[in-house]
Length: 138
Image 1 (spheres, one colour):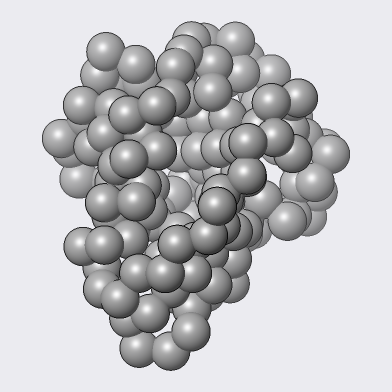
Image 2 (image 1 turned 60 degrees about the horizontal axis):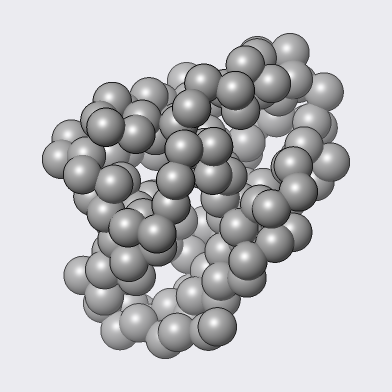
């Protein structure tokens, strides 16, 4: 499914829709360049899971944790070279903690995702226009 959004609120709302469908153990791999809307989409996703905290990009911390009925573990792989570095920071542990793992810059860790990972490809088409393609499995 591909959706076109024309502003930040619409991108947020698409994330929120997806968030409402997720369960414990879900993994969402986000793909897209700078300013593609990955963090805005993740804010919406967290909101869909009932998390009303300020969700920000974890570029410098690698992972931010947001606690709710189902916690969200928000990863940013921009600074990692490969999936080995992700496993070094405890990726396996996060997968088993009963939360939802959301990974920005997933293209940097292609071998890290389990079966059933939801793939979200975001593309900036200029201004506030984005395309969001969601597929059920990686």
